[in-house]
Image 1 (cartoon, helix red, strand yellow):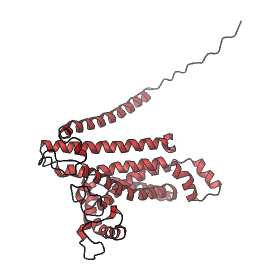
Image 2 (image 1 turned 90 degrees about the vertical axis):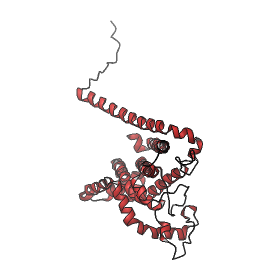
Image 3 (image 1 turned 180 degrees about the horizontal axis):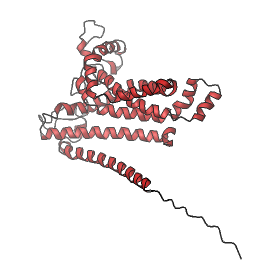
Image 4 (image 1 turned 120 degrees about the horizontal axis):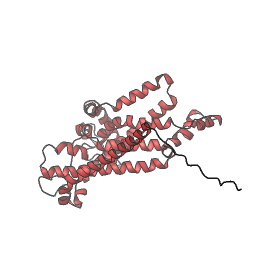
Length: 329
């Protein structure tokens, strides 16, 4: 009599009630986030449809903003460029600060003060935007104008640092030329997004494989050599993800930018010169005194900002997923 053929035994996992409830809660939370995001986008598209029909394609190429004056003569070209410039200035300042703080906390800080430093950095993220705006307007701006004048004097040959209508070598040149600029607004926003970027980077750096750290030391590497060959390559996804998260926050910052900049409705590529514009500041400035058609135009501008931040975040997610730390999570 032949022996029965081997058959694979089916394993039936029977999760408990707690596991099933957690799975339902996790799926529900994810679905709720997507639903809220779609609802926000749909609301902005519905409210801005009237202005988009009137403005058409020139809505994205016109710099002037007169939706309640000359009907149809309005657009977001200037505010979109200003938004991107403020975000790039903020990230340029915040990235080295966040990266340095994250590396010091995760790799160099003594254990007895590490938790204190983490708490202080996290508390910086809890400071209201209006506080940063007041600090930037009444304190930081008077010190940043000197730096702006110096940059304009020695690097004015770069179009980004050019200041029109004033001779930077003239000691009697008005200081007001360098106030309320993209440069100052971006600097203040940089202090706001640094804690968020630092937290993301610090968590990823802390997950670098201990075996690879020890192997680097065993091969005679110094601490910086270990960081350069193990921690930074492993944490590339966290660096990119934290930077993009900070950029998304900078693009949508409203109160701080609104308190510092002097709104101009023209393309202003000179970051050191007084006058700037962003989508969020535009909405804050005109929402209270706009007609129904003006509100629709503001909603259309908000929709453009919403789509831009989504594109930034999706691009960051794609890059992070290809990195080592992102793939492991």
